[in-house]
Image 1 (spheres, rainbow, N blue to C red):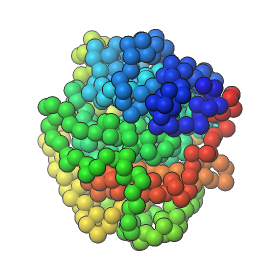
Image 2 (image 1 turned 45 degrees about the vertical axis):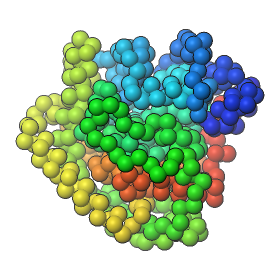
Image 3 (image 1 turned 135 degrees about the horizontal axis):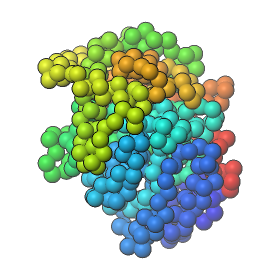
Image 4 (image 1 turned 90 degrees about the vertical axis):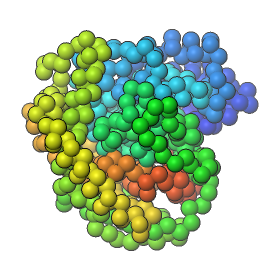
Length: 481
């Protein structure tokens, strides 16, 4: 297989070639490394290639799964593979290895995916731009002076640039959806509990975090959710299983949906004209497909959400960092962390148990109030973020800011996505609009609790009506084909 052929297929397309014996997994892996070598030097999306790991997997023999032979990247934060470094975007934990696969990584392997590298991530995921001091900034393949977003920015840049069709990400406040929007990809955040966080955790980031992938096609995301979904033994809670495979939902018609359209940020932060244009394009397209679009005010309390974030995020990150320090034997030293990360850890140390309990009580109140909106609406449509592109350096995690100041800065740029993390609802960013400057700008849909099916039906319908896979950034493996 040649690079020019490889980049034409999504993950399921490549897997189909393997199943028909038109190409071997070894060929796909070879071309994936060729694609990484061709464009990664300008993007810094992949911080480490794993050629020995990939060759060992091929030599052992790959399981017969839905993605057998498909090259795959994992983020340097979150899911971990046995004996593969996972630095969490930090200098402190650089080259830290775990002795076992996390439950999700084991599921990826059973699906036949071949791990070929690790992608860049901000320090402890505490940024919506990927510019860690540990690894340097990742660059957006649509324009190198801009960020691919974060915290799954390295994964997004790699998929957008054609290195692999699928890469792992996680999402604690928009970290799948924001990079997907900025890089012209499809990004789905599943419902809380849909994918197990075991065995190392019952939930991520006090319930705000979940895991999934970034893809070019909707069907790849749906099929990967089929691979990933379901509880593990000992999980603290579960969720009703889907009625049918998520992949089947992509081809099903969604029916006429009632979609609330929210243009205003919940705390009144300005939203750029390009992001509102992207919203208008999504409204136009949905209306043309027969859906009912109704204008609504922000259906959640942004001030309350920021109040909740301070005790719950800071203590979750502190607990995570303390756990990593205990496992690694590496102390938490101020000089080894970016300033805003250290400010977050210090803030978390001052939070009392009573303040955490109050935060959880407010989180319950927030979820109940937000949930009432979805009694009368099938979906909520908002911009994915407030700026059409993020210049590198705009969100400087090494600035001398307090944790509340840093949170306010992040929320002003990204005021829409965290609501679904707080409530645990599924949400997606869909690439339906490109600005006059040539930047993709995502449209953001939030669904009812446990209802990824409706999101995937609509996403499939939108993809068929207005395809995006043919759009390629200037910095793409295609230019080397």
